[in-house]
Image (cartoon, rainbow, N blue to C red; front, side, top):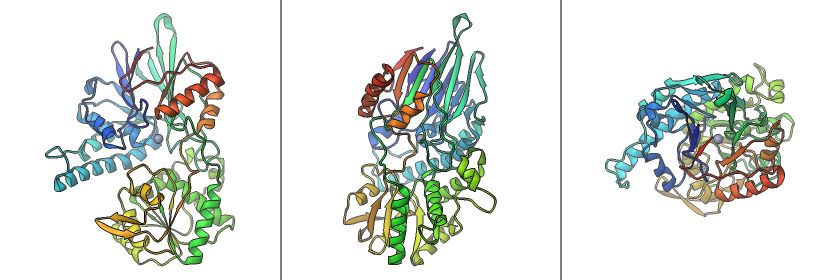
Length: 462
Ligand SMILES: [Zn+2]
């Protein structure tokens, strides 16, 4: 069997791993490259294997950097099952159409402004491709073995990273009736965070592919409760608005849980909360609905009357007119809106209105990539351009850096440490090269492993 790394080699996006046997081929993850233009250009390269010959795709979780290439693959002739867990399928029904919409919007905008070198600028895929991709989704519960081909089977293990996230254990028959197992970590979740069950530890395998996003770092130790409580007290005192640019999946639900926790414990008084992102509203409903994924505390709290990620003062504002009504809102109030890095979406309208007023606060709760408006605000810019208009920044800009859906270095080690046998081959994926080198050194020191760090295009005979 041959394994080819088609993405997330010495970088963190575009996860795609091609597996080829004599008469069969499959892919684990089918992600888009994201971020700077030189990354995104990779999405346009011809796919290095005939898409129609792929027998299956297995998806670890719903994030677009693990799934967003599926519509493009379908466009190129892929028509076989795309296996994922049931919550991942449900999330993808929200995320893939949104990704297609963004692609179409971007192409339309590029054609209007004439900034693309390509004429006409085309979307990577269209809504019809996303809908065709959704038809191929084959939900499979955690733990159930699925035969992909005679002698090749796989199952999902819970990974706690976002709702539905899984690791993939793939088993293949080799000569002499023996079996070989390959373990794909997917994105590893964290221990001791609210809402979702913890990751299932790595059990051991012949080959291991493990993510390394935070392979050289530890998460900030500050308690997110304290940061959030302080900001809520401040806007109550100032009668201001606390604006939280949030990622729709996972981070939003975590913030809602934290706010509910603070109010329940009497740390802060209840204030009106508005959830102003159609995608975040749908994701929150899915996080509520899949009770099988809730951890012990969430299970204990959750009932038909009480939902810790839907506090009593929460009002979802799904429609544009609901959202516009928030412009007349007086504080104190909390508005949670997307996108998390302020690259687009409804948050821009709120920023335009709320940034000039010093009684308001903008609280960033996630990573802000270079080149985004979020990053500029965090770096203290005094003025920012929104929809072609300069807006003075007089509101307080605050940041909470301890929330993350990824295991840090220590958590990755913990996840790996409970194994029952040693891997023969360890492949580091999904990380910047520096972080991977540091993590490789750490693994050698701690476990005596000698991991390889492939580049995109590298292949292994297994
Ligand atoms: Zn992810």
